[in-house]
Length: 484
Image (cartoon, rainbow, N blue to C red; front, side):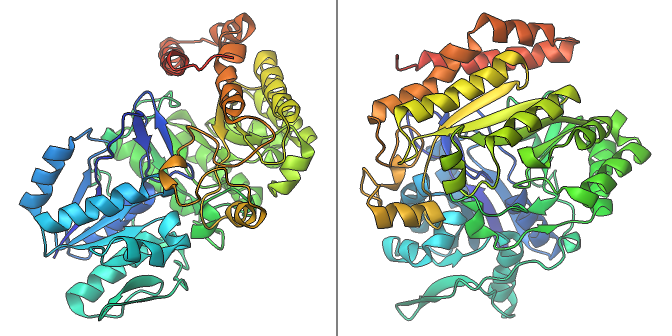
Protein backbone atom coordinates (compact mmCIF):
# COMPACT_ATOMS: atom_id res chain seq x y z
CA UNK A 1 0.00 0.00 0.00
CA UNK A 2 1.42 3.37 -1.05
CA UNK A 3 1.09 6.16 1.52
CA UNK A 4 2.12 9.79 0.96
CA UNK A 5 2.88 12.05 3.90
CA UNK A 6 2.79 15.35 2.12
CA UNK A 7 2.68 19.13 2.32
CA UNK A 8 1.12 20.47 -0.89
CA UNK A 9 2.26 23.89 -2.15
CA UNK A 10 0.52 26.85 -0.53
CA UNK A 11 -0.30 29.58 -2.98
CA UNK A 12 0.02 33.17 -1.75
CA UNK A 13 1.70 36.43 -2.59
CA UNK A 14 2.35 37.00 1.12
CA UNK A 15 5.66 35.14 1.26
CA UNK A 16 6.96 31.78 2.42
CA UNK A 17 4.71 29.74 4.72
CA UNK A 18 5.85 28.09 7.92
CA UNK A 19 3.43 25.27 8.52
CA UNK A 20 4.87 21.98 9.71
CA UNK A 21 4.94 21.49 13.47
CA UNK A 22 4.45 25.08 14.44
CA UNK A 23 2.14 26.40 17.12
CA UNK A 24 1.57 29.50 15.03
CA UNK A 25 1.37 30.20 11.31
CA UNK A 26 3.14 33.02 9.53
CA UNK A 27 4.21 34.05 6.06
CA UNK A 28 7.91 34.90 6.09
CA UNK A 29 9.80 37.16 3.71
CA UNK A 30 12.66 34.64 3.72
CA UNK A 31 12.33 30.85 3.56
CA UNK A 32 12.09 29.31 7.04
CA UNK A 33 11.04 25.67 7.03
CA UNK A 34 10.69 23.82 10.33
CA UNK A 35 11.41 20.10 10.27
CA UNK A 36 8.08 18.44 11.17
CA UNK A 37 9.11 15.76 13.63
CA UNK A 38 5.70 14.15 14.26
CA UNK A 39 4.78 13.73 10.54
CA UNK A 40 8.35 12.49 9.96
CA UNK A 41 7.77 9.98 12.76
CA UNK A 42 4.57 8.91 10.99
CA UNK A 43 6.48 8.25 7.76
CA UNK A 44 9.08 6.26 9.69
CA UNK A 45 6.48 4.10 11.45
CA UNK A 46 4.72 3.41 8.16
CA UNK A 47 7.96 2.41 6.41
CA UNK A 48 8.96 0.12 9.28
CA UNK A 49 5.58 -1.62 8.98
CA UNK A 50 6.10 -2.40 5.31
CA UNK A 51 4.18 0.43 3.65
CA UNK A 52 5.49 2.05 0.49
CA UNK A 53 6.03 5.54 1.91
CA UNK A 54 6.54 8.75 -0.01
CA UNK A 55 7.64 11.93 1.76
CA UNK A 56 6.76 14.93 -0.37
CA UNK A 57 7.07 18.34 1.24
CA UNK A 58 6.42 20.61 -1.71
CA UNK A 59 6.76 23.68 0.53
CA UNK A 60 10.31 22.86 1.63
CA UNK A 61 11.18 21.73 -1.91
CA UNK A 62 9.72 25.01 -3.23
CA UNK A 63 7.80 22.99 -5.79
CA UNK A 64 5.28 24.65 -8.10
CA UNK A 65 1.62 23.72 -7.96
CA UNK A 66 1.75 22.45 -11.54
CA UNK A 67 4.70 20.16 -10.88
CA UNK A 68 3.19 18.93 -7.64
CA UNK A 69 -0.04 17.98 -9.42
CA UNK A 70 1.95 16.12 -12.09
CA UNK A 71 3.82 14.29 -9.34
CA UNK A 72 0.61 13.36 -7.53
CA UNK A 73 -1.13 12.15 -10.68
CA UNK A 74 1.91 10.01 -11.52
CA UNK A 75 2.30 8.48 -8.03
CA UNK A 76 -1.40 8.00 -7.20
CA UNK A 77 -0.92 7.06 -3.53
CA UNK A 78 -3.67 5.00 -1.97
CA UNK A 79 -3.59 7.19 1.16
CA UNK A 80 -2.41 10.81 1.42
CA UNK A 81 -1.96 12.50 4.81
CA UNK A 82 -1.71 16.29 5.11
CA UNK A 83 -0.97 18.31 8.24
CA UNK A 84 -3.01 21.50 8.26
CA UNK A 85 -3.54 24.70 10.26
CA UNK A 86 -6.29 27.29 10.54
CA UNK A 87 -5.00 29.96 8.07
CA UNK A 88 -4.62 27.41 5.25
CA UNK A 89 -7.43 24.97 5.97
CA UNK A 90 -9.56 26.36 3.13
CA UNK A 91 -6.65 25.97 0.72
CA UNK A 92 -6.32 22.37 1.82
CA UNK A 93 -10.02 21.73 1.23
CA UNK A 94 -9.59 22.95 -2.35
CA UNK A 95 -6.36 20.99 -2.74
CA UNK A 96 -7.96 17.72 -1.63
CA UNK A 97 -10.88 18.24 -4.02
CA UNK A 98 -8.55 18.97 -6.93
CA UNK A 99 -6.20 16.05 -6.22
CA UNK A 100 -9.13 13.67 -5.81
CA UNK A 101 -10.08 14.40 -9.42
CA UNK A 102 -6.52 13.55 -10.51
CA UNK A 103 -6.42 10.36 -8.43
CA UNK A 104 -9.93 9.13 -7.55
CA UNK A 105 -8.56 6.06 -5.80
CA UNK A 106 -6.63 8.08 -3.22
CA UNK A 107 -8.12 8.43 0.25
CA UNK A 108 -7.26 11.72 1.95
CA UNK A 109 -6.72 12.43 5.64
CA UNK A 110 -6.17 15.77 7.36
CA UNK A 111 -4.49 16.09 10.76
CA UNK A 112 -3.45 18.91 13.09
CA UNK A 113 -4.83 21.29 15.70
CA UNK A 114 -7.55 22.93 13.57
CA UNK A 115 -9.20 19.66 12.56
CA UNK A 116 -8.81 18.34 16.09
CA UNK A 117 -10.81 21.33 17.34
CA UNK A 118 -13.38 21.24 14.51
CA UNK A 119 -13.27 17.75 12.96
CA UNK A 120 -16.74 17.63 11.45
CA UNK A 121 -16.33 20.99 9.72
CA UNK A 122 -13.73 19.77 7.20
CA UNK A 123 -15.78 16.73 6.22
CA UNK A 124 -18.79 18.97 5.64
CA UNK A 125 -16.89 21.66 3.72
CA UNK A 126 -14.78 19.21 1.71
CA UNK A 127 -16.94 16.36 0.39
CA UNK A 128 -13.91 14.69 -1.21
CA UNK A 129 -12.11 14.36 2.13
CA UNK A 130 -12.19 10.86 3.62
CA UNK A 131 -10.75 11.05 7.15
CA UNK A 132 -9.83 13.37 9.99
CA UNK A 133 -7.28 12.33 12.60
CA UNK A 134 -7.68 14.15 15.90
CA UNK A 135 -5.01 14.56 18.56
CA UNK A 136 -1.30 15.25 18.34
CA UNK A 137 0.00 11.69 18.09
CA UNK A 138 -0.94 11.49 14.45
CA UNK A 139 2.17 9.45 13.73
CA UNK A 140 0.76 6.59 15.79
CA UNK A 141 -2.83 7.22 14.61
CA UNK A 142 -1.90 7.40 10.91
CA UNK A 143 -0.13 4.05 11.16
CA UNK A 144 -3.22 2.50 12.76
CA UNK A 145 -5.47 4.01 10.08
CA UNK A 146 -3.25 2.70 7.28
CA UNK A 147 -3.17 -0.79 8.86
CA UNK A 148 -6.95 -0.66 9.20
CA UNK A 149 -7.28 0.11 5.48
CA UNK A 150 -4.67 -2.45 4.44
CA UNK A 151 -5.26 -5.29 6.87
CA UNK A 152 -8.72 -4.71 8.29
CA UNK A 153 -7.21 -4.37 11.78
CA UNK A 154 -8.71 -2.23 14.53
CA UNK A 155 -9.34 1.39 13.52
CA UNK A 156 -7.70 4.09 15.63
CA UNK A 157 -9.72 6.04 18.14
CA UNK A 158 -10.28 9.72 17.46
CA UNK A 159 -10.87 9.52 13.73
CA UNK A 160 -13.78 11.05 11.81
CA UNK A 161 -15.08 9.56 8.56
CA UNK A 162 -18.08 9.10 6.30
CA UNK A 163 -20.49 6.20 6.81
CA UNK A 164 -23.18 5.85 4.14
CA UNK A 165 -23.40 9.61 3.79
CA UNK A 166 -23.35 10.32 7.51
CA UNK A 167 -20.36 11.84 9.28
CA UNK A 168 -19.24 9.88 12.31
CA UNK A 169 -16.36 10.05 14.70
CA UNK A 170 -15.04 10.76 18.16
CA UNK A 171 -12.52 13.15 19.68
CA UNK A 172 -11.51 10.57 22.27
CA UNK A 173 -8.16 10.02 20.63
CA UNK A 174 -5.39 7.74 21.83
CA UNK A 175 -2.02 8.93 23.07
CA UNK A 176 1.23 7.00 22.98
CA UNK A 177 1.86 5.72 26.50
CA UNK A 178 5.64 5.42 26.20
CA UNK A 179 7.38 7.71 23.71
CA UNK A 180 10.49 5.52 23.98
CA UNK A 181 8.59 2.92 21.94
CA UNK A 182 8.83 5.16 18.88
CA UNK A 183 11.73 4.52 16.49
CA UNK A 184 14.16 7.32 15.78
CA UNK A 185 12.95 9.34 12.81
CA UNK A 186 14.28 8.17 9.45
CA UNK A 187 16.05 11.37 8.39
CA UNK A 188 16.92 10.07 4.92
CA UNK A 189 13.35 9.12 4.11
CA UNK A 190 12.11 12.53 5.26
CA UNK A 191 14.77 14.61 3.45
CA UNK A 192 15.96 16.37 6.59
CA UNK A 193 18.44 18.60 4.79
CA UNK A 194 15.61 20.50 3.08
CA UNK A 195 14.67 22.27 6.30
CA UNK A 196 16.25 25.55 7.27
CA UNK A 197 15.78 28.35 9.77
CA UNK A 198 17.93 31.41 10.35
CA UNK A 199 18.20 30.89 14.13
CA UNK A 200 20.70 28.05 13.84
CA UNK A 201 24.42 28.63 14.19
CA UNK A 202 25.81 25.12 13.78
CA UNK A 203 25.56 23.36 10.40
CA UNK A 204 24.18 20.88 9.55
CA UNK A 205 21.31 21.16 12.01
CA UNK A 206 18.04 19.42 12.69
CA UNK A 207 15.12 19.07 15.13
CA UNK A 208 14.08 16.50 17.73
CA UNK A 209 11.31 16.35 20.33
CA UNK A 210 12.09 15.08 23.81
CA UNK A 211 8.47 15.43 24.86
CA UNK A 212 5.06 16.31 23.54
CA UNK A 213 3.55 19.63 24.55
CA UNK A 214 4.52 21.38 27.75
CA UNK A 215 4.66 20.59 31.48
CA UNK A 216 2.81 23.85 32.17
CA UNK A 217 0.09 23.18 29.58
CA UNK A 218 -2.20 26.07 30.44
CA UNK A 219 -1.45 29.01 28.13
CA UNK A 220 -4.78 30.23 26.77
CA UNK A 221 -3.49 30.97 23.26
CA UNK A 222 -1.47 27.81 22.59
CA UNK A 223 -2.89 25.57 19.87
CA UNK A 224 -0.88 22.58 21.10
CA UNK A 225 -3.09 22.31 24.18
CA UNK A 226 -5.75 21.06 21.73
CA UNK A 227 -3.46 18.29 20.51
CA UNK A 228 -1.85 17.12 23.73
CA UNK A 229 -4.04 16.83 26.84
CA UNK A 230 -1.09 15.47 28.84
CA UNK A 231 2.62 16.16 28.88
CA UNK A 232 4.76 13.12 28.16
CA UNK A 233 8.51 12.88 27.93
CA UNK A 234 11.02 10.38 26.60
CA UNK A 235 13.66 8.98 28.91
CA UNK A 236 16.94 10.89 29.02
CA UNK A 237 18.78 7.79 27.77
CA UNK A 238 16.51 7.55 24.74
CA UNK A 239 17.02 11.21 23.83
CA UNK A 240 20.77 11.00 24.35
CA UNK A 241 20.94 7.91 22.14
CA UNK A 242 19.19 9.81 19.33
CA UNK A 243 21.58 12.74 19.72
CA UNK A 244 24.50 10.34 19.50
CA UNK A 245 23.06 8.81 16.32
CA UNK A 246 22.60 12.26 14.75
CA UNK A 247 26.19 13.18 15.54
CA UNK A 248 27.70 9.92 14.32
CA UNK A 249 25.53 9.21 11.26
CA UNK A 250 24.78 12.70 9.97
CA UNK A 251 27.48 14.90 11.44
CA UNK A 252 24.86 17.19 12.98
CA UNK A 253 26.36 20.28 14.65
CA UNK A 254 23.22 21.82 16.19
CA UNK A 255 19.91 20.44 17.40
CA UNK A 256 16.75 22.32 18.29
CA UNK A 257 14.37 20.45 20.58
CA UNK A 258 10.85 21.50 19.61
CA UNK A 259 9.08 20.19 22.69
CA UNK A 260 6.57 22.86 23.76
CA UNK A 261 8.72 23.47 26.82
CA UNK A 262 11.86 21.44 27.43
CA UNK A 263 11.58 19.14 30.48
CA UNK A 264 13.02 20.55 33.66
CA UNK A 265 13.87 19.40 37.19
CA UNK A 266 15.64 16.07 37.71
CA UNK A 267 15.05 15.11 34.07
CA UNK A 268 16.99 18.16 32.87
CA UNK A 269 19.81 17.48 35.34
CA UNK A 270 20.15 13.86 34.14
CA UNK A 271 20.09 15.02 30.53
CA UNK A 272 22.81 17.61 31.09
CA UNK A 273 24.96 15.13 33.00
CA UNK A 274 24.53 12.64 30.14
CA UNK A 275 25.53 15.22 27.52
CA UNK A 276 28.70 15.96 29.48
CA UNK A 277 29.58 12.32 30.30
CA UNK A 278 29.13 11.19 26.68
CA UNK A 279 31.08 14.17 25.37
CA UNK A 280 28.22 15.38 23.19
CA UNK A 281 28.58 18.87 24.67
CA UNK A 282 31.83 19.10 22.69
CA UNK A 283 30.24 17.81 19.48
CA UNK A 284 26.90 19.57 19.09
CA UNK A 285 25.10 22.77 20.07
CA UNK A 286 21.67 22.33 21.66
CA UNK A 287 18.73 24.76 21.74
CA UNK A 288 15.16 24.49 23.00
CA UNK A 289 11.95 26.18 24.12
CA UNK A 290 11.98 27.11 27.80
CA UNK A 291 10.07 29.02 30.49
CA UNK A 292 11.58 31.93 32.40
CA UNK A 293 10.61 30.50 35.77
CA UNK A 294 12.50 27.28 35.01
CA UNK A 295 15.80 29.14 34.68
CA UNK A 296 17.89 29.49 37.83
CA UNK A 297 21.55 30.59 37.83
CA UNK A 298 22.69 27.06 38.75
CA UNK A 299 20.50 25.39 36.13
CA UNK A 300 21.60 27.86 33.42
CA UNK A 301 25.28 27.18 34.18
CA UNK A 302 24.71 23.43 33.96
CA UNK A 303 22.87 23.81 30.64
CA UNK A 304 25.70 25.90 29.21
CA UNK A 305 28.26 23.30 30.29
CA UNK A 306 26.11 20.60 28.67
CA UNK A 307 26.26 22.33 25.28
CA UNK A 308 23.08 24.41 25.29
CA UNK A 309 23.33 27.49 23.07
CA UNK A 310 19.91 29.18 22.69
CA UNK A 311 16.73 29.31 24.76
CA UNK A 312 13.49 30.43 23.10
CA UNK A 313 11.28 32.12 25.72
CA UNK A 314 7.75 33.52 25.59
CA UNK A 315 7.77 37.01 27.10
CA UNK A 316 4.32 37.72 25.60
CA UNK A 317 3.57 40.85 27.66
CA UNK A 318 5.05 43.17 30.26
CA UNK A 319 1.62 43.60 31.87
CA UNK A 320 0.82 41.27 34.76
CA UNK A 321 -2.91 41.39 33.99
CA UNK A 322 -2.21 40.00 30.53
CA UNK A 323 0.15 37.30 31.78
CA UNK A 324 -2.54 36.23 34.24
CA UNK A 325 -5.34 36.26 31.66
CA UNK A 326 -3.17 34.16 29.33
CA UNK A 327 -2.53 31.69 32.17
CA UNK A 328 1.23 32.05 31.74
CA UNK A 329 1.81 31.24 35.41
CA UNK A 330 4.66 33.71 35.84
CA UNK A 331 5.37 37.33 36.65
CA UNK A 332 7.46 40.11 35.13
CA UNK A 333 10.19 39.73 37.78
CA UNK A 334 10.66 36.12 36.64
CA UNK A 335 11.11 37.34 33.06
CA UNK A 336 13.87 39.67 34.18
CA UNK A 337 15.61 37.15 36.44
CA UNK A 338 15.33 34.33 33.89
CA UNK A 339 16.92 36.45 31.16
CA UNK A 340 19.69 37.59 33.49
CA UNK A 341 20.51 34.06 34.67
CA UNK A 342 20.61 32.71 31.11
CA UNK A 343 22.81 35.52 29.81
CA UNK A 344 25.22 35.39 32.74
CA UNK A 345 25.69 31.70 31.99
CA UNK A 346 26.53 32.55 28.38
CA UNK A 347 23.29 31.35 26.74
CA UNK A 348 21.59 33.09 23.83
CA UNK A 349 18.12 34.40 24.73
CA UNK A 350 15.43 34.48 22.03
CA UNK A 351 12.29 36.35 23.16
CA UNK A 352 8.81 36.30 21.68
CA UNK A 353 6.23 38.99 22.45
CA UNK A 354 2.58 39.34 21.48
CA UNK A 355 0.54 42.39 20.54
CA UNK A 356 -3.21 42.69 20.06
CA UNK A 357 -4.69 41.53 23.35
CA UNK A 358 -8.38 42.58 23.48
CA UNK A 359 -7.97 44.14 26.92
CA UNK A 360 -4.66 45.96 26.36
CA UNK A 361 -4.45 49.68 25.64
CA UNK A 362 -1.82 51.18 23.37
CA UNK A 363 0.07 52.32 26.47
CA UNK A 364 0.14 48.76 27.81
CA UNK A 365 1.28 47.35 24.47
CA UNK A 366 4.08 49.91 24.32
CA UNK A 367 5.10 48.86 27.84
CA UNK A 368 5.83 45.41 26.44
CA UNK A 369 7.87 46.92 23.62
CA UNK A 370 9.74 49.02 26.17
CA UNK A 371 10.57 45.99 28.31
CA UNK A 372 11.73 44.02 25.28
CA UNK A 373 13.91 46.92 24.18
CA UNK A 374 15.40 47.23 27.65
CA UNK A 375 16.36 43.56 27.66
CA UNK A 376 17.77 43.69 24.13
CA UNK A 377 19.76 46.91 24.53
CA UNK A 378 21.16 45.91 27.92
CA UNK A 379 22.38 42.62 26.50
CA UNK A 380 20.08 40.46 28.63
CA UNK A 381 18.44 39.17 25.43
CA UNK A 382 19.70 38.63 21.90
CA UNK A 383 16.81 37.93 19.53
CA UNK A 384 13.23 39.24 19.51
CA UNK A 385 10.18 38.16 17.58
CA UNK A 386 6.88 40.08 17.70
CA UNK A 387 3.64 38.45 16.64
CA UNK A 388 -0.07 39.25 16.67
CA UNK A 389 -2.23 37.38 19.16
CA UNK A 390 -4.29 34.77 17.26
CA UNK A 391 -7.17 32.83 18.88
CA UNK A 392 -6.84 29.43 17.20
CA UNK A 393 -9.94 27.21 17.32
CA UNK A 394 -9.83 24.81 20.23
CA UNK A 395 -7.94 27.16 22.55
CA UNK A 396 -9.45 28.79 25.65
CA UNK A 397 -8.76 32.16 24.01
CA UNK A 398 -10.90 31.23 20.99
CA UNK A 399 -13.79 30.23 23.23
CA UNK A 400 -13.47 33.44 25.25
CA UNK A 401 -13.34 35.53 22.07
CA UNK A 402 -16.58 33.97 20.78
CA UNK A 403 -18.34 34.40 24.12
CA UNK A 404 -17.28 38.05 24.48
CA UNK A 405 -17.78 39.15 20.88
CA UNK A 406 -14.09 40.05 20.49
CA UNK A 407 -13.75 39.12 16.82
CA UNK A 408 -13.41 42.06 14.43
CA UNK A 409 -13.79 39.67 11.49
CA UNK A 410 -16.04 36.73 10.73
CA UNK A 411 -14.50 33.95 12.89
CA UNK A 412 -14.79 31.67 9.85
CA UNK A 413 -12.46 33.88 7.78
CA UNK A 414 -9.64 31.50 8.61
CA UNK A 415 -7.27 32.82 5.97
CA UNK A 416 -7.05 36.04 8.00
CA UNK A 417 -5.58 34.21 11.01
CA UNK A 418 -2.12 34.55 9.45
CA UNK A 419 -0.69 37.34 11.65
CA UNK A 420 -0.86 39.93 8.91
CA UNK A 421 -3.56 41.74 10.91
CA UNK A 422 -5.28 41.47 14.29
CA UNK A 423 -8.44 39.37 14.15
CA UNK A 424 -9.60 40.54 17.58
CA UNK A 425 -10.90 43.95 18.58
CA UNK A 426 -8.57 45.97 20.78
CA UNK A 427 -8.60 49.49 22.24
CA UNK A 428 -6.14 50.29 19.42
CA UNK A 429 -6.81 50.60 15.71
CA UNK A 430 -5.67 47.51 13.74
CA UNK A 431 -2.91 49.47 12.01
CA UNK A 432 -1.57 50.59 15.40
CA UNK A 433 -1.26 46.96 16.49
CA UNK A 434 0.77 46.12 13.39
CA UNK A 435 2.96 49.20 13.78
CA UNK A 436 3.97 48.13 17.26
CA UNK A 437 4.96 44.73 15.88
CA UNK A 438 7.02 46.45 13.20
CA UNK A 439 8.72 48.80 15.63
CA UNK A 440 10.96 46.06 16.96
CA UNK A 441 12.90 46.40 13.69
CA UNK A 442 13.34 50.17 13.79
CA UNK A 443 13.39 50.82 17.54
CA UNK A 444 15.57 47.86 18.50
CA UNK A 445 17.37 46.10 15.66
CA UNK A 446 18.54 49.39 14.14
CA UNK A 447 19.52 50.89 17.49
CA UNK A 448 23.32 51.43 17.48
CA UNK A 449 23.58 49.97 20.99
CA UNK A 450 21.96 46.71 19.88
CA UNK A 451 24.13 46.55 16.76
CA UNK A 452 27.23 47.14 18.90
CA UNK A 453 26.22 44.31 21.25
CA UNK A 454 25.92 41.96 18.28
CA UNK A 455 29.28 42.97 16.87
CA UNK A 456 31.02 42.63 20.24
CA UNK A 457 29.58 39.12 20.55
CA UNK A 458 31.33 37.89 17.38
CA UNK A 459 33.96 35.29 18.25
CA UNK A 460 34.52 33.30 15.05
CA UNK A 461 33.49 32.82 11.42
CA UNK A 462 30.34 30.96 12.47
CA UNK A 463 29.29 34.00 14.51
CA UNK A 464 29.80 36.22 11.46
CA UNK A 465 27.62 33.94 9.31
CA UNK A 466 24.92 33.81 12.00
CA UNK A 467 24.84 37.62 12.42
CA UNK A 468 24.63 38.11 8.64
CA UNK A 469 21.69 35.68 8.42
CA UNK A 470 19.91 37.62 11.15
CA UNK A 471 20.64 40.92 9.40
CA UNK A 472 19.15 39.64 6.15
CA UNK A 473 16.01 38.55 8.00
CA UNK A 474 15.68 41.98 9.63
CA UNK A 475 16.17 43.79 6.33
CA UNK A 476 13.53 41.60 4.74
CA UNK A 477 11.02 42.73 7.36
CA UNK A 478 12.04 46.39 7.14
CA UNK A 479 11.41 46.27 3.39
CA UNK A 480 7.72 45.83 4.17
CA UNK A 481 7.70 48.24 7.10
CA UNK A 482 4.40 50.07 7.41
CA UNK A 483 5.66 53.27 9.02
CA UNK A 484 4.93 54.74 12.41
